[in-house]
Length: 81
Image (cartoon, rainbow, N blue to C red):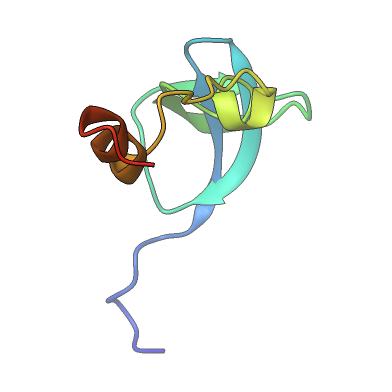
């Protein structure tokens, strides 16, 4: 790899603001905020609006679309079966 062209990769803490869920991960993102993690070290804090803790796909709280797709709506509109 070329020197000096890649962003710095470091450990950061991501905080899901909708559920207060925190997890430690690697990232090139940086932040002025910091937080002390469970291991006693201080890491940059990145706030996110959604994570696996609050996303409907992962929580199982998805809304099912019972209306149907475009073809179903077209057939219903023009009484085609």
